[in-house]
Length: 201
Ligand SMILES: Cc1cc2nc3c(=O)[nH]c(=O)nc-3n(C[C@H](O)[C@H](O)[C@H](O)COP(=O)(O)O)c2cc1C
Image 1 (cartoon, rainbow, N blue to C red):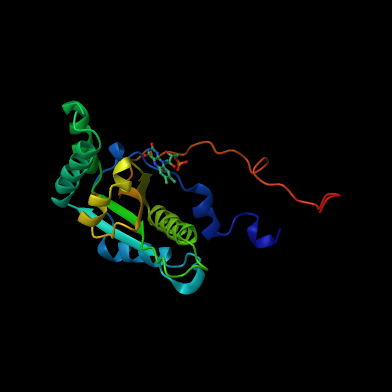
Image 2: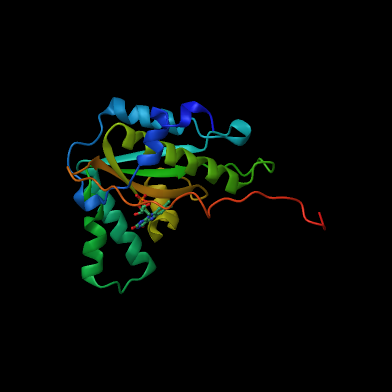
């Protein structure tokens, strides 16, 4: 290991210390427009096979979060018209937990057989992770959440995606409470191995 990695270089410290912050503990403010642009710039550093630039981020803040809650409810009702009212209210309130909800998505090209959709989704997910790391590095809070609404074609179109695009997550963003989480992390052992060719290779 190069000397510069022991102790970790500042950039690595950010990666090693990142932790999600539960949306219900988030507070104002959301990152400034300039900080959000920085986070998107970090997303654009993700590997990108074929230069397809699949990364897409939709910012939902302020009153628009109420409309997103309505969209969650409508989507739940399309899936299950008999959803109990109390579950609908949980859906409706979800976007209000954080100052900003970022819809992270992938704009998928189907005319590039050499770059299958999963690679484009992987690039967009790597971008979303860079976005999360950047938000964390700037001292804000972020949480990547999902729900069945991500796969709802009507919701995709309402949020400005195409039905054939992929919505990857709802990234809740805000300011962390003073006691932001510092979860215990497993060591790297057990998550990697060195391969050697066996007799059949
Ligand atoms: C694609 C994706 C979807 C996720 N969806 C949810 C979710 O809907 N609800 C949830 O509690 N955690 C979800 N998580 C996990 C949280 O974002 C977070 O990683 C987890 O709470 C552990 O915290 P940590 O990131 O600090 O390890 C999701 C993570 C990913 C990558």
